[in-house]
Amino acid sequence: MTVAAPVARATVEELLRDCAPRVLGVLLRRYGGFDTCEDAVQEALLDASTQWPAQGVPANPEGWLVRTAARRWIELWRNESARRRREEAVAAQPPPGPVPAADDTLTLLLLCCHPAVSRPAQVALTLRVVGGLSTAEIARAYLVPEATIGQRISRAKQRIRAAGAAFELPPPGERPARIAAASQVLYLVFNEGYAASSGPSVHRVELTAEAIRLTRQLHGLLPDDGEVAGLLALMLLTDARRAARTGPDGALVPLAEQDRTRWDRSAVAEGVALVSTALRTTPVGPYQLQAAIAALHDEAARVEETDWPQILGLYELLRIVAPGPMVTLNRSVAVAMVHGPVAGLRELDAVAGEPALAGHHRTAAVRAHLLDLAGERSAARAAYRLAARRTRSLPEQRYLLTRAEALDR
Image (tube, rainbow, N blue to C red; front, side, top):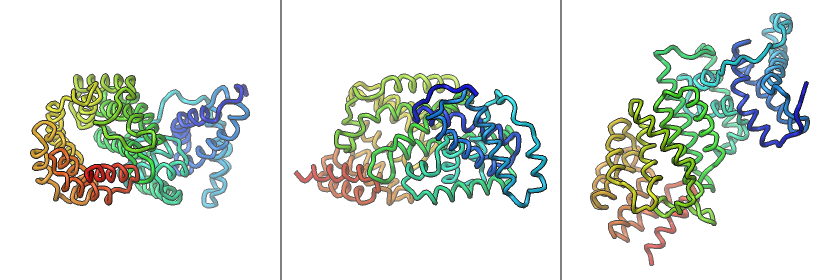
């Protein structure tokens, strides 16, 4: 076997994550049985992660992984006492031939997002199976016990097996809904990484990077899907601001106060091109509209140049296409920027009692911001403190309390 010189562990990890879904696809097509195939692939990835950094990457990494995973699959199968009768037939199979050219990543992603699986379990299983992250890595990213993630993955596998799901693309009639579910999973992963809902960090780069990587793959597999293009554009346009979102001390810096020279202009240009093409050539959807709003923010060289009337118009469309609590909150800010803070507060008052908004920290934070703009210092201070009590994100809590303290002066 021809190998290269020893390589950096980070390079090996990236290669393994790229190979993992394709290798799993080969085993699933050959043997079936999601649980056993996935376990075999994970063991092969573990072997590679310990051997390749020191011994070098094989000339055919996917072939190496397929052969190793196939051997592990046979070992796992032999250990299942209920299936010993099939041991000889399985062990006698010839070794796998060349790795097929077909890319099963889309099939695998849609299988992970099977409707029988809950959304949290879909997220965990996608990151494990398609993303190639270990259970421990997923647990660290979400700040939850490793056992919790393990249980979610195990339950997801059980539900897929119980549903009798085959490793194949769903029928054409089911495909749009499954692609939408997969997009939602990637969107949730990105959002949790970019605006961590709890813990000491503003963002978790490992999650945003993984979401963008997987969405790039999905876009490559579905280049004519306007919403997938819109989702990738939205991620790029949002993540482009990451370097400016925190100060030297890690404190949160709001959009209006960010140093725009620190934004990633190459990501902005790519995102703008993606969403412009999608809006011009495909039916308009919510990810495209959100990406268009992000593009208007990113294209403004100074905060004063932000095209708020156009942003408000896009929120009006978004409210029709995909209404939701965050759309409502963000639209009230756009109303305030176009028609004044009092108008924005009226919009907020009309919906603040809705169940999804009533106890949310962002509702109090938006109210505080609009009251601050309106010059209602005492009321704004109280709203900032209420928002700080409600959030579980420590940087966001510090930012809100700092704004409240500034109004005491």
